[in-house]
Image 1 (cartoon, rainbow, N blue to C red):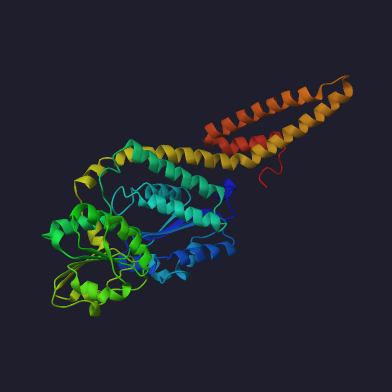
Image 2 (cartoon, helix red, strand yellow; image 1 turned 90 degrees about the vertical axis):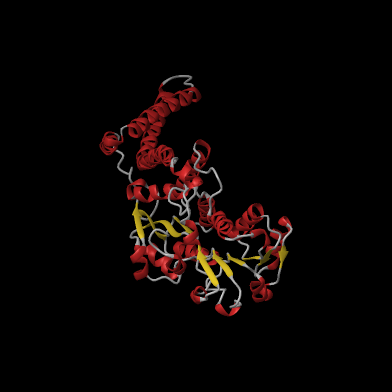
Length: 418
């Protein structure tokens, strides 16, 4: 990317790990909190990185950014998480330049999601870009790229059935409950954690189970009360977590805690309990699953479930790829134009200098010379000439380097690449 005049960094990279090779435990090691993301961006800026975006979800943690070497980005990730470089290398992927661009398109449009067509990632990408912009590490390239991915995502939603049906981790968890639990409307359900996944799960529970015995608990009680008020549900204090768990038939854990919040000691050993852990990192201790009366499912298990909705979505993949290809081609055309920008700018400056010198000469030579009209006419001619050059470079990218060299030579544009 060094020839495109878009960053001080030599190359554009995507570094990260996802559900494809990293299990929930490993993803948990590299999970970034809101605070650690901001600190990472701040440190990146201090290191001279001028373009970087950081995303961390239950399915993946990724950094998109400019660097001399990908290790700069890997180092930042490991410094702000509990993961190590050695662990990262075992499960990670690294994409460079055009491949890194293509990867963002796949991720942002839901084609790379754990549940195909899950479009929540695009809103997370938007939020990540805003954070980078506020931190002063979002250059025009990243803004253009994110907007292009958003455009592709919108087109796929509008022009295909990729987003048809209700399919997400939260919906998959409720589907599992409906399929596996008898008399679900009579069971006591406890939802611990009311972040985004918790809210979505709560909405699906109310909509599909017809259950009036749903209790919400959140460390910050007022957040739980806002959701409970919407659905007329019960809210309990965090201090009552143990007693509420012991009264429950189903426990859904969706907190953002970095360490397990549900331990063996909290659970009554003589009552059947189904636990769905929708958290990254895992929020249910491993020893809980060893209890004979407890069944524990993590979101990785839930995400593997397929149904008719997912099968229909798979049929939309070819159409979605065509849309992505169209938008990506347009983005790459813009990127190619960035390579021409210094030469075009230098050429315009050169032509303007020639124009100014000629108008000055003619104004001294011709009586009553109309300088204002001559300025208008000559500027329009220069603009037409510039458009011809720009269109040639844009349409003939195979020989653009030779064309740039010729333009620089003919017009003696010695400072065109500076």
